[in-house]
Length: 247
Image 1: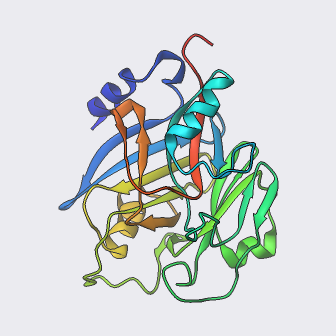
Image 2: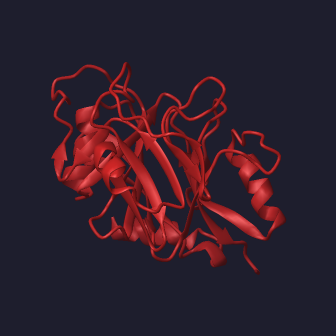
């Protein structure tokens, strides 16, 4: 596993080599790609609208915008559920600007399977926070995206996950360490249940908090792996921005 991580890092452009580490891992019969970022060092951002107010919808359009300022997209994935218009279903904050209010009620679908949570990026750290706690504490996030359900809450799987569930989809999400420094994004490379995806974060990645982003539309942009998934136009996207080589 360590040798694989070293090889992955070696394929990254020199200026972006420190920015994010992506690797393929397995748990039982399931396979995942995980990308790990250090929130204290790296430039984590959310992307939805460009300067004209147009939804980015794709990794390529974000890359084009960043290139104009001499930066590159070292990693990205879809980062929360959205409506047909690409507007976020839940709370969404980008660069300090709130675009959608916090939703605290339950409801239909995966988003409403409480407890759900918020991925919050702030100065020097990033955290997955259960929605009720987020509403109470009101942390000073610079970027935030609400999604659901929570996968892991204080080291425990979501109470409504079923070990014998037959509902399997390609899924993606994010988990964070207690100190907010370690941020691990994951996408399954085969259809998995919520229980299996939660166990990845709890048992293998050893993270106390983890949040589901979505399924079916799940996409990953990992240049270090030579991977940028095609597919439907997206809503919110999370990414790690790094200086382009030579800058």
